[in-house]
Image 1 (cartoon, rainbow, N blue to C red):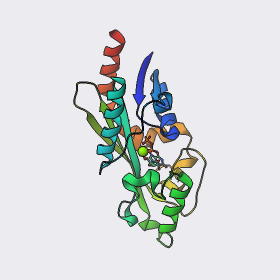
Image 2: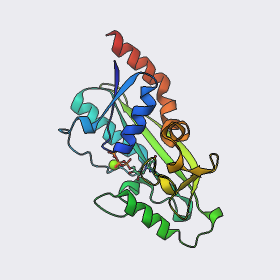
Image 3: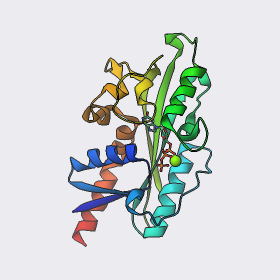
Length: 203
Ligand SMILES: O=c1[nH]c(=O)c2ncn([C@@H]3O[C@H](COP(=O)(O)OP(=O)(O)OP(=O)(O)O)[C@@H](O)[C@H]3O)c2[nH]1
Ligand SMILES: [Mg+2]
């Protein structure tokens, strides 16, 4: 069976990649399957740099093709924060609940039309002996005043998606995976990825 390795320890991301790839008969493995690989420090200043750091470190460790995902929420009224610090916005250890509370607090009193935001996802594909490629995807929305829904992860309960008329966390995973920043980025990797996986199966 075809297999793709994603350099993530985030179970929410892992589920989404599994779902997206399963429809194409591809099995996903993540760092949750490789506990011996040390934590990769996210020292980059952009999503792309951090995605490359994760993908290349794990690709080197396993000598295999690896995809890294660095993603986050950018709120216009907060000048793009939490941005690359989305996972740890309310401090260590990372905690989705506290991060979401912090964003809600910072947006207290900000009217609906000024609560615009987007999710951003950078993916890096590292292949031994080749130059790493990056792609990105976004998903536009705005920040609600209260949580809605229990699906997804992270800030999904407070991220309203106008085209769906609901919070991201109210959408079933099939729906999120059609419109998400992650799905948009992954679509741009599709053709390259298909060619690589075909070759891997032949050899
Ligand atoms: O509501 C959300 N829906 C999403 O679809 C989504 N995608 C990313 N995020 C947020 O951005 C951080 C990523 O930070 P991040 O890329 O460093 O990942 P992470 O540290 O969680 O795991 P890893 O992949 O680095 O192991 C996450 O923790 C979340 O807070 C999302 N929130
Ligand atoms: Mg991280």
